[in-house]
Every structure is written in structure tokens, then in C-alpha cells.
Length: 320
Image 1 (cartoon, rainbow, N blue to C red):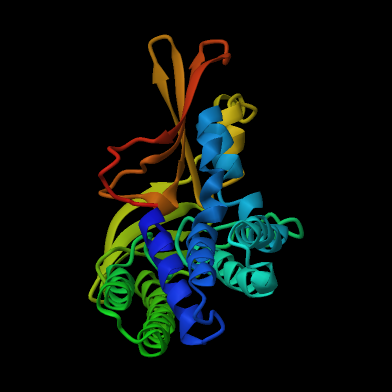
Image 2 (tube, rainbow, N blue to C red):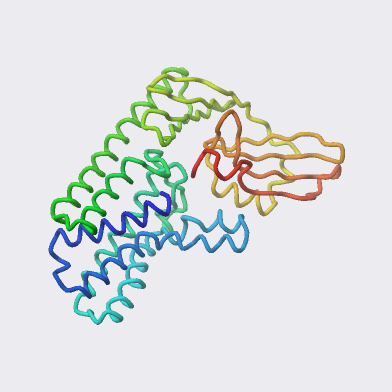
């Protein structure tokens, strides 16, 4: 999810810890706990530093090893141990570690529920897991957790009431969205009369979704508005001829192929050579495919230039 939501959940997880009375009444423990859950809720996304090495490195690294099985246990240790020592609460190290672990696991769980996905099974499996249930930002969850945090911190609300209720509503909301998603996948398959692989992807609006269906020869893209299936574009699959094959070894293409799920590739002839465009159809929006790699070749099929990333404005959808 977005950074703001992750940090907010860190605050409310600290509140949930107080609701269980495990945090006690020691101000030092409370401060250490708040820092631990907030930092833990964001820690897996420290991999954004990979952007300094370029977008290819970022695509390879983001939501990979920092969200992996070993990281679930290493992040809490790296965070809780220095905090317990600096706040002189080493006797509460176990409690700090536990709630930091909860924060890290919840971060990865939320990332798994959106369309971008996460490599949460590494090093056992490098497969990208994306449930396509939640949007990158969920207004309902943000409002619920903001209200609980403000009521607790600013108005002295009872943690034992606010935070179990907030997290109960969160789990209920995720359950409803999961049920809604499964129902819509079946609706799209029935409407298009196809057995292809279907992705139904949420938006900020609770009843507006986008879909992508891949068959042996075609990609179908469209949207669902209040369960009405609206087909927008059909993209034919292109055979991998020599022009396309000449780009497979490019660094940006290799990074893209390691992440993309529904791959569409096409090429155009230019005055001085060719342009090959790789796109991930999952992220289509407004009849366009804004995420992928553009590779320029000369007439001898030598790579002249390539660019990996988003072909859209930062403020335009999709937000992933």
C-alpha cells in the first residue's frame, strides 16, 4: 500500500498493543513501542533506495528480498533491539520484537493484497503474489484508522475499544473485498465466454474495477462499473520475430520480464530502424498500456537506446 497508510497502521498497531495491556504503563515502553511499530510498518519499503541505481535495479529489488520470509524475522530484530537498549527497556525486548514483527508481517500482507504484488515466498519461491483485492490506497481503511488514532492520541479514547474495533472492521473489509473480487472474476469470464486467465483489479472507488483477460491469442481489457462488464480494447499477441528477439537481452527488458505478469510486445518501423515496446497489460488505463520498456534498434538490429518505466504523468492512474 502507500507509505502514508503503512505509517498510519504502525500507529494503530501501537494502539492495539496498548489495548492488550501488554505494553503496560511505562512511558519509555510506550515510546519505544510506538517507534517500533511505525518503523516496522514501513521497514520493508526501505528498498526504495534501489532507485538511486536506476529504475531497472528498483524493479528487481522492490518488494523482493526486503519482503521475503527471512526479512519478516530480521527486520523486527534490527528495529527492536536498538530501541530496547536506547530506551533502557531490555526486559521488554520480547514484547517489542513481537509487535514489530506484527507490523512487518501486516505490511507484507497488505502488499500481497494489491495488484503490484510481492515476492513474499523468497527464497523458497521467487513468484510474484498479488491477490488484486485492495487498491494501493483504500479510503475506507485510511478513514477508520485515522479516526481511531486521533481519538486515542488527541482525545484520550480507550485503546481497548478503538483498536480492536478498527482492526475488526479492517479484516471484515478485506473479507468483503475478497468475496467481491472472486464474484467479479466469474462475472467477467461469463460475459466474455472465455476460459483465459482473468485479473480483476480494484480502484479507489468500491464498485469500479478494471479487468484483463489473457487467452492464447488475445488480451481483453475493460472495466466493471457496479458489476456491468464493459469491454474496451482487444490486443492481439505478436509472434516473437527477430526484431523482438533482438531486445530480450537488454537490461531493462530482463528486469521487466522478471516482474511483468501479462506481457504484450509489439514493434514499429522507424526511419532509422525499429522501436519495440514491451508492456504489462495488467496496468492498462484509458485504452493505453503505460508501463513497460521501449527499445530503439537500428537497421542491423543493434540496440541504440532503451527506457524502462511509466509512460504517464505521476498523477495519472493507475496508482501502483
